[in-house]
Length: 136
Image (cartoon, rainbow, N blue to C red; front, side, top):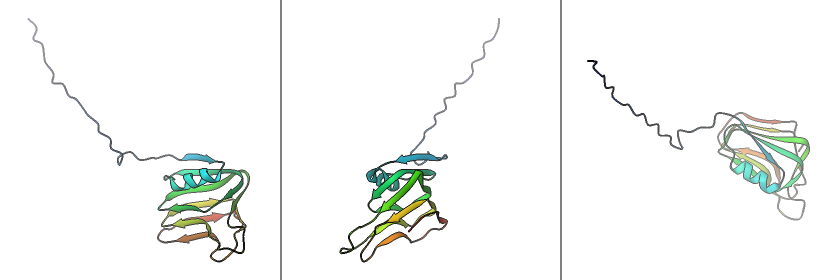
């Protein structure tokens, strides 16, 4: 008579939490409107490359508490337009605050008139800010 051997069952449960899941690859985010650019900047995650289609984008855009994000022109000239009325207060077209390892590449900052008008403002803590091939 053969003896049968009973092996214990081992059940392994893997529990993933949102904090445990991190993005480890770059994501290309393509934008073609001012609203999409605002959303992409506000929701940027580490590794995102925000590729802006050629055209004119009006508004104020912000990268606040971000890291490892690239903003770049895609397929032609990209104009980030500020306040075209010199009789009113201007604003900052692109604000980078408390962020690290940010690259802004190939963008043109235009038509920002009035008191307080800025093309790009970098403030707060952070390092590794690269601004290349931009026109102000």
